[in-house]
Image (cartoon, rainbow, N blue to C red; front, side, top):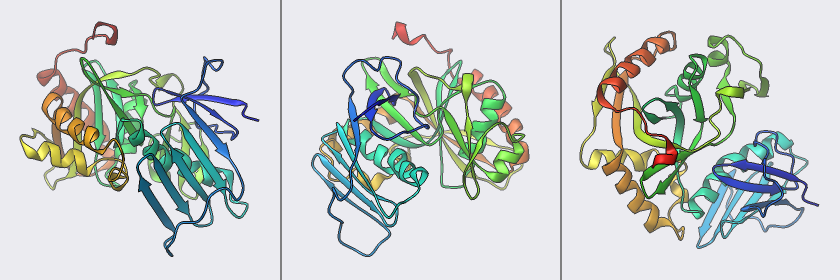
Length: 307
């Protein structure tokens, strides 16, 4: 019996799984956009010997994670989960709320970027970059300085008549141990050997916010950071490179639509290269540098209801 109601990425979910990472849905009485169901021996295994196998077909996405679970997303409305070998529920949810959720967003025509999203007076600023580039550490420092966070991992971008907006994701940060130490070890729970879940509380932004710019973090030897607006096809290329699980897009019914959407984002939103020396001790300096550049280059954000 499905008893749990949640809301994330602008979608309502009902689930027979308990998912403490998902925000509860305040309007749980209405029909849900997505149903999450768990079954045993429900899904055939995918062929291959890899620990992580997936298949993309029109309207169907399937994922096998050895020793954890099998997942299937159907027609953007149903997620079936088959836990394996008495796997830990936290591990099952890790791939449900990560890779499987990314595939669901693709099916629904939402564009998932792999990064963090920050609400600012100048609109939403997304930060993307290679794994280990410091996205979550930066989000934690923004949160510590009073900013609200929309997402720490998957940034779902939606096209609206007035442009693009970022949808609120999960109300927590997931930090490695050294980043957790640097932000003062706030109240949180150990998620993995070296990962901590830190609730955002009032620093979670629960509503969509207008997208202003996508920042691509990259390393630079200079002691001073650089803020550079990108032009032409570089903007499109970097957006594609920083999709969440870009291999999941090929074969989706929404592939052509989302490919056009990447081009539109490149035209309508700023794409910025942020080159800096990777030094966690100087994250506060980097944020002040970003704030100065935002105030010089962007107008204050209009309220969403006026868009």
